[in-house]
Length: 202
Image 1 (cartoon, rainbow, N blue to C red):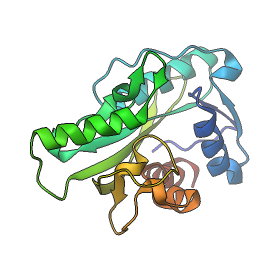
Image 2: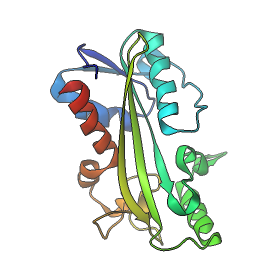
Image 3: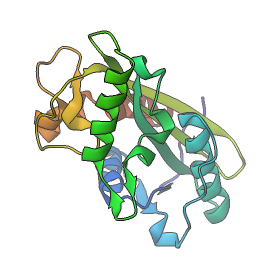
């Protein structure tokens, strides 16, 4: 496994919330973080059908464009009763001409589970795949998973995305009801980052 030895890292995202979260996680390592926006990089088209494929597109495009190691993630929710959907299309299910509407996406999720009479518990997983890519084309991949189940009706107004219908294993509340710090401690992204830090920064 290749160690990260530089002092500058490009985080291949335009999402300020994600950028801040990653900056906080890597603060102990004294790495200077920049984002796609800082380098006026466009969002590459995500044409793959897997999380790792799309994360690789984003990481390698940024690393090649700027000549720095680049970190990208692709994440979403997979639901057993829907054969793994929405998966890489997690955000797409929320797209409307007026922007993303995750209440609509959650209603669609429950309607589709009802339509196929999916058995209970309706198992699901939040997944996060991180790819750290270097300008020479090398990369390291880390995958994090938070298992749980889909619950209805929606509960809680914390978090974002599908959090109000996702109840993580071992808890009787949804991500939408959970304190942000508690969620960030146990989440799929935290799982992936622990592996990244142990592998490349430890």
